[in-house]
Length: 579
Ligand SMILES: [Ca+2]
Ligand SMILES: [Ca+2]
Ligand SMILES: [Ca+2]
Image (tube, rainbow, N blue to C red; front, side, top):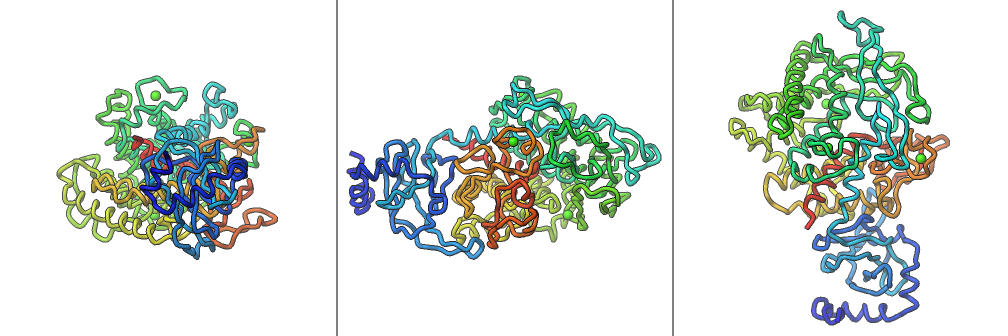
């Protein structure tokens, strides 16, 4: 029955299937074969039935077969694509395109007639639901100042760490009203990354990305039940989770002058230990223009996103945010070039940035939108759409303007939209030319988040244009993050068949639980720092393959709130498209 269907569809391919599929010994061997991650790369989380579905073969196989993972029965076969060499990974891949096969189930890709098979993966309507919830829930599991209970944290339950209710004003942050040594309260927020500190600049792009997700996908957010302490109240759980960070973030502003402290940290990084065991004094360090502009932008956006929310609590918060934004802009106007410089006695993350023109643009764009006062023509002149990062934020302002429904912004909206669409088209072309089908052609620290942020640009471009021409490229970004990459890893902890076990994350390293805290996106391959482990760990010299699942590799195996945010955006956008 099934073969007659293939005869119609695929002609000669069916003959191939009959040869391999009738062999019972081969069926058994294929069901039992260990995943050949070296030879076959799949999206380990799965594929939608009707989506474009592509795996990559790193083997000299002219044909591939799709088998039922439990019976070994062949269900589909086709020719592999042309071999393509990629200089960034140093390997050659052939596409295994099984888009024409649409039946839900659990399958493996095998080399024709051989027992070399991929890890099992699913085709189904619901493949991305659990991982999306997991990616958002990682923020809950990384909260400061609250006990992670067994009810919500399962085996990652732990005592509360870092209440931050008595934080010392560092000498660098002293002001008339708050001289050095003053104690302030700045509780809540998430641990930034593998460390225990809280940084305004990195929280800013994170907060923005999650706010944007809520703005663009409100109904989907309302449908997400995250099993967190705030589940069941009248605020969407994703927003509740964001509020844990946003309410802390608001306390980083000096109410006397509107300036924003750059960070809240220990003087030095802790060794690996549980959060509640790390009890060194905490400081707010130096107000900076970067932190203050970022803060002005994010609070202005929060105002806009929450101002007409059904929740009274969120509407009230919106007003607080707008006031905070205005005060921050005033401080930044009076202090336009206070570049963060790490004080001599502080050695935690610097998040230093010498170029604030992008932060200024972003803050001006967001505050203009919040106040409904369009800047004059020329505001966008010279601004380019780029892949956003914590220190490169103009694209965030472009996105907000491009999605504005305020007609007084119409000319700016059009200009911003055309920049974003042109950039998304450029990314889509790059992905067509790349053997691994992603748009990334450089591998910076946190390269996985660059892939996810490029996916976010494509999703915004889909929204602007109403065109699904970005979908194949978007799916390739997702595939890359979930296993179709030269390392063979699904880069999200706790998901996929091969995923990071030894992440650079203090609680994961110290909690005695073998599995890392789930739902985190690791930074992924790059060659920016090769000697983070002592003695150095062997890593590929090819940037797209240079990854190591060891705890010391902070340059490839750390996690961070700003990396997870575009992952949530991408996964949530894809999950919201479920059939
Ligand atoms: Ca809720
Ligand atoms: Ca910058
Ligand atoms: Ca652990």
